[in-house]
Length: 221
Ligand SMILES: Nc1ncnc2c1ncn2[C@@H]1O[C@H](COP(=O)(O)OP(=O)(O)OP(=O)(O)O)[C@@H](O)[C@H]1O
Ligand SMILES: [Mg+2]
Image 1 (spheres, rainbow, N blue to C red):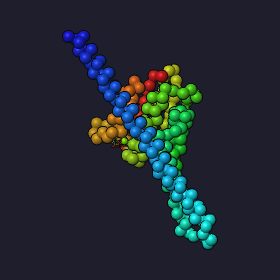
Image 2: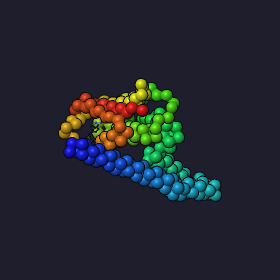
Image 3: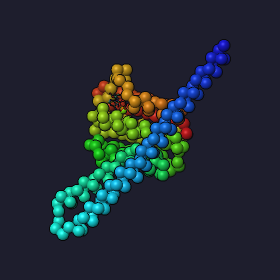
Image 4: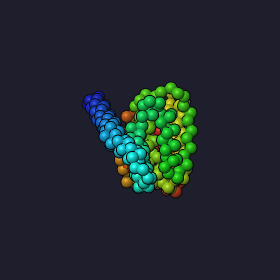
């Protein structure tokens, strides 16, 4: 009977893993579709508008401030769309790998928020398995998002280390921290745990109210 129970549990765990894998795969392919659609539809139309405005600018003899202003707005809009596409599906991750993608992410956070980000990488240039790269990137995105949304941090230290067969990411904010037992879990932390579980990794969160938060993710590679 015990043997049967162990077998049953194993089957149940395998099914759970398959299910989670399917959920994340669907999510990633939806993201890809959204990014491609945005690029091909809205992006194309905006480029056409930009071109027309440029032509108008040439036809009209005297300079129109309203036209210049509209051209500027169109440029901003194109940039915004580009940012959204890159956020949804960072091409740098698939093309150049985790190291470059994290550099880009940290830079973007520094440019768009008032938080100082210190990134330390002890990584070589060897590419990791795609599922590990994607999981670590999505986890870093969620941790940044949480730190910015909830913590009032002014400094974030992100360290990524590859050593003795382990990949370890340490994400530390100097924000207000939280009480793990008394917090309403959103999708973010649940998703994070599932992603870590799927790559057979482990996650530890150390936080106390007023004392910042450290999240450490480890996976054997
Ligand atoms: N770095 C942090 N500093 C302070 N509080 C945090 C931090 N990270 C998470 N929390 C707290 O933990 C809660 C749960 O986080 P979680 O990411 O699961 O959900 P969320 O960010 O509220 O929503 P979602 O991620 O679904 O958009 C947050 O609402 C917040 O109270
Ligand atoms: Mg969150």
